[in-house]
Length: 475
Image 1 (cartoon, rainbow, N blue to C red):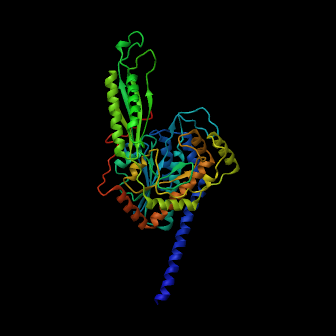
Image 2: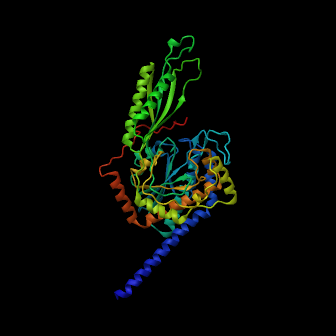
Image 3: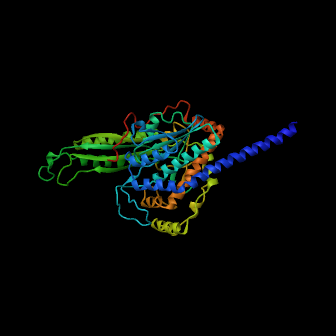
């Protein structure tokens, strides 16, 4: 009897596996079927190019898209008007998908393979129009999969504004919006396809404001106390400090207000600082030393100084259990092949980057899996990763070799190259969410690794403290 049952059980398992795989493929095909719709949404957000905490129309468009698919929408979460949560489900594991949609200031917003002068205030040089749209597409595809297959589970889309320096996810995490989530998925536009363990630097940013006394710079200079002198003295001291910080640290600044006329001693000046390192405790120490430099500069120039923390984000906590699942799905979905027109465009972009020839192969392949990565940038996804097991990846929405925050990234993101990479990302998130909702053991393993890496006694404390969201940081 046992000899008869064993092959029967194996046959049933193989049948169930084939059915599960077929339903997964159907979910991925549904994304292709709506490719034109999602491409149109992405381009609407690309044309809007709204900066951090100003993304009213972009946020509304994604909310309306998800609401039309039956998602329940909670608007204005964490006291942020453009942040929202969209949910569909019936209990079971909760899978979160993060979406962004803010643009960067001071970039040309044109889908051309040569640099033009900026024709607007902002541009999508980090591809968040693709980010938010792909995440929306994945959330809808997973919702449809849950309904079709009568699976217990919940898919939740997080509309996350102001990633570029505003840190909305920090406030969302502080409000406990991720506390009941089992796994969080995200992705990011890139110049290659990769799902290796990622990293990101912890970061504290602040605006330092100096107040002095105005006077005629030639007629009565002795009556003045220059706020700009305070800023420049601070910058000099911080630049000397660079020799005495860990070599992995990064410090950068811009003078956002240095006065209005040379013959008027400026009574107000402002400098905007970022401090970064791959450990948040080191960032805190560096930032405290920057504060001391500002205090010393004010004392030495006869001015006063106050500062406002704009943003503070944790480093990224990796999760190899999840990362391997994502890498497997990205590998199965594969990269992209350029059409002849796309290749002509990409070749011109490659020339602008100083390349002798286009390395199109990078867009076609999936990079080998690596368990460790170095980091140079920062993201508020880091805070989410210390609250819930989190995993991400990148797809080649930009021409190989392109840097984020460049006009070349803006240009490719406004073409079919960007849209193709966006669809690859949507499919990869969809496939990963389906795997997790189909196998609770994967979620359990990810949570075990998460607790081991985070530490048993860890308590999440945002680097921004109790400050309200910096809703005006781009104004």
